[in-house]
Image (cartoon, rainbow, N blue to C red):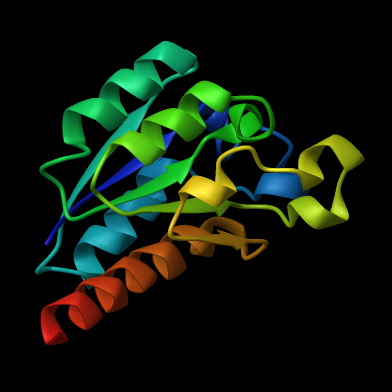
Length: 146
């Protein structure tokens, strides 16, 4: 199974950015743990602070990968372009948020991309990425059983 985690703006600062909200673990730590645990899964990673680069990456992998884990950061709440891109590709996308966005500012409670995604996982800290990976594995298993 070939998956990719795509992170949006400011998520390159995990481990140092607002640790009370996002924790102290870096994305590199998370990736190392996931790769050790899921040996049969090829796990790629991409991060950009630029919306267009996120769209380019989604289009690049969106027809050949088995799953995409997307934390679009603040673009979650503003980007119709990301929504449209997710709708245009065939690879399932799971939306991820480290924090519980429903327990934060009002403007974070609306996701522009959620309706285009297979599902959303939020509020479990950096472990949200593991939960999304497992959701994609289960989704693939269910498709294979059809």
